[in-house]
Image: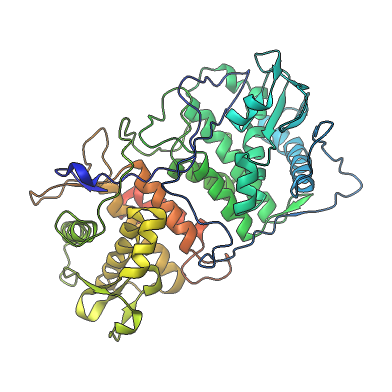
Length: 499
């Protein structure tokens, strides 16, 4: 987020890993090659971070029943054992079983299993993996692409190296991240069978559908419907993390060849599949989901200064929030809010405090003040980026909106509407082709955000949401992301229908 006049205030939080470059084509030879480009400037905390709810995903392989055949993975002659090997076998077994049932129901044809193998690639493995447009596939090839499906030979390959991306994701967030990646790759095999990979569709369209199918399978595992694996709430969170970790670099036009979409878009497609199932995903080639407005070329990776001056983060954000809600809602009960900076929660004196100050900000409605927990907000800023601060401030203003509108929502539903209203504000500061969709009436410097800021919002919610779908306090990460995306896509009016 930044003010247009200040060149030093570009806020674009780069996701840690990027998808493939524009020179790689998605064809029937190789679908969805994912390049790994580490960017240490921003990353989600690992699951052992004590500030994160539900720190230990518990994806569990379930012994198959007598009528379920185990789908083998070609581990090669000298593979080092991994803690997640048995889990991946369970994943592949259920993916085959699921598609054997879902494919005929959706497409009216018998499903043909993979003709080729699923190969684990690692250093020291002989070049016994078939090539995809080349004579053989080497470990160096796989390490570059992380995971891919190849239509020539109908096989899949994933990086099983100890220093590879997938092993790192499994260590930091749980093996469910790899399960999500394999479900995504398997979706490309489905696309080959329906002829989608030969239709010259934009890469983003086939990738969106594959993300949706991966979400649909994750939902199956989370609901206890999978034959060989069970997912916990932590595993679902891990699947969402996997989507943010393989999104396009900030500034990429998602419609170029090889474009996969921002983390915001990829998580959205995943959630549609999770909630609505594979039949809904099957419609996305003809009727794609809405995408974040493209901002090609905006690849800044700096943060707005954490400070309180006019051109500092906690200077221009409250100003814009006050201006937006004053113009958006013509109601007498909504007064401009003032930020009160505190260094300790013990310093707060308010009889009607709304929100959790431990996350960074909370509203005192009786005094029209937002208490700003500087140490907590600064930690979010340093860990996730400056729009993490923008998000928690936005929700405090959203709480003031609900108070002014006499909202009778409480608990989780009230918190989720705050997420949605924050997304409605964000929609107005997200440029479309360089132009703000709803400029402020007052002639002042414009506040703008980028795709990277929205990804930072997703990362913030992944960190702050309830541990379990059953907690019902502020909403778990899945629910909060869904509410926020509703606001960003449908605007404030789409949120106010909930009142």
